[in-house]
Image 1: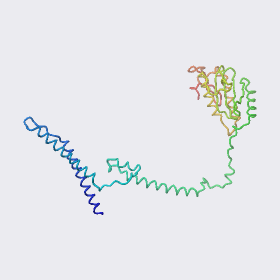
Image 2: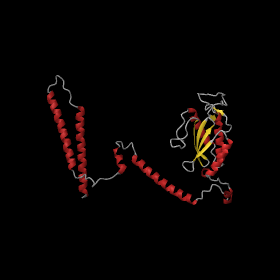
Image 3: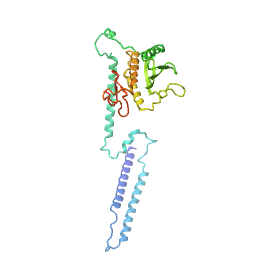
Image 4: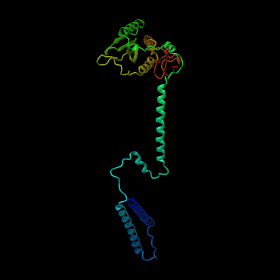
Length: 310
């Protein structure tokens, strides 16, 4: 049985070789073509017929070897479709010697196995270690002060109202109206003299949003609720809104004192009472690029143009 299979394979290999030779003959004949006969040379038509005859003969030989190879029983297709996955794409590369994909694939598998082994060993060692950064006793760590969690956002509304009453008595030219249309969050509608209006959103004692508009602009929407989204139509108050949000982040100290942060911000906002009358602390001008000094220093409350601020 084995001898028969070997003989069939050898015959099939010979058929393949004959097929390749016949195809090579056809290719060589077509590449060379028929020599162009000269005027003195006779029998040009006979040479053309001879060329076509040889070409037909070679094509018939190719067809014969192809049919014999297809009828051969040495090559048997495997039952079903063999699923090779992405590895089947490796055969599509015409230059196998210059692309050592198989060796690289084996190296990748070895590296992956080693990495998995080292990771499992490291995990077992880390589970046995207590991960202490120092050799000090536990009593020392117990005495270290810990940061108290912030509770400024859960302050009762009564404390917020009491603090706002303090602001009203301190800043008599800055009336403050408190509204709570959505429950706990407080909306402060601040009117600073005849200069500007501001809407401040408080969650407890933490400022979440600030919007500044002109004195003649509305801060309420059609439903009578505070409008915190529509910007002012004036560039100067858009600049002040940006600076107010920067000040909100600057004074944000929830772990120290929420009341101190809110009080510092309100003091800073009250300094805009002289928005259109105070000159720049650096250049001494009232207007620069058609805008008054819209920036207020966080510590000294001095007025600066946006391009003159330190």
